[in-house]
Amino acid sequence: MPVPTAIVSADIAAPRNRILDRAGRYALSAAGPVCMSGAHFLAAVLVLHTLSPIHFGYFSFVMTVVPFCVSAAAALIGAPTTIGIRARGHVDAAELATFQKANLVLAAFAFAVVTVSLLASGLRPSAALMFGLYGAAMSLRWLGRVYAYATDAPGRAAASDALYGALLVAGLGALYLLDRLSMTGAAIVLFVAAAGSMAAFRPRYLASQFAPSGQGRLSAYAPVWRDLTRWSVLGVAATELTINAHAYFVTFFCGPSAFALLALGSLLLRPVAVVLAALPDLERPAMARAMAKGDIAAVLRSVKEFRTAAAAVLAGTTMIAAALLLWFPSLVLKQGYDAASAWIILAIFAAIMALRAWRTPDAVLLQAAGAFQPLAAIGMKASLVSLAATLVLLFAFGPIASLLGILAGDLVMNAGIFARSRAWVLSHG
Image (tube, rainbow, N blue to C red; front, side, top):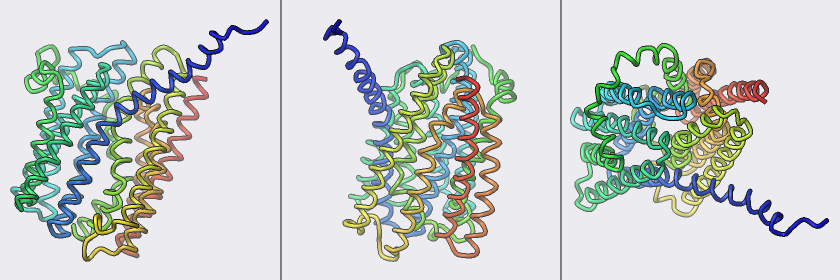
């Protein structure tokens, strides 16, 4: 008996509609990070062509250390939010108030870390303080993004990212046209952009962030820290050492000007890093909800689709970066920067980002499953390899060779995460 045409059409349309729906969600969630990375790229180009290499080195260092603060915010606040979703299916108001209070403490810590790091590397106090405020504002903003995704309002997160990018480009563009661009001026614009972009979040949320309600107490965060987030933060710290040891070693041992050339690689591939940092905020809650329902097939489907999206972003970004170096080298290189070295750096960074794009979906799966302690252990092993290899290669062969130490750490990280994720899948399959 022939199968009715309507049924066949429905069978074909269902997966197609699911793919289109998924593509739409990724496009929405990626739109914000793309705006951010585009704004950071334009900002870096303006600093590169206007200020000295040492100032570009400082700017690049800020673009390394502030994302670490943001990652800490995601670990301290985003992780327990995800666990709450998996346990109850929604965000508890009392817990949100507690997390918002903890976020204020984290913002103060981010301010201190960024400011002290820059002062220790030789930047003048006025610029260091403003960059510190920028780090604090970005930490506060990130909880808003996590909450938007957790409450299924990704449009607000994307709007905040887009507003941040628009304010940053407008501010730095104005300073450039007025010939007033300086490190302090750039820091002020970054802070204003980060603070202003929080206007995209709900007024009630913003009010509770800066004046948290009495429903939750900061002391209530203690058991969350003991049972969960100390491991997620340890994992973030270990990952930071694994992926950015070269930034700290080269900056402090060789100076910001030596780091400036290495920063070109991260600048050209920044969209990949931003997307890999932002998409987990979308995928982690979705995976947690699927786990709560026992829908392992949906979890694995999310991992596969996440990896496909990450690979597409990596491929597109790498091709654009190669095209810039090949046909428009003056855009990303200035006098004193060696083109041959830039190609080597781009190649190493492309390999590093490929490893990260491949493992991040599995790492997010483990985060959604609450496996923060195993992730921290994997990160510690990888960080030890990265630290040792980077330091040896730096003193033996110079700054560019130190990137191979980062590559070694990433290889160890990939091996550990894939082994753990396979074990989880086998135990829940």
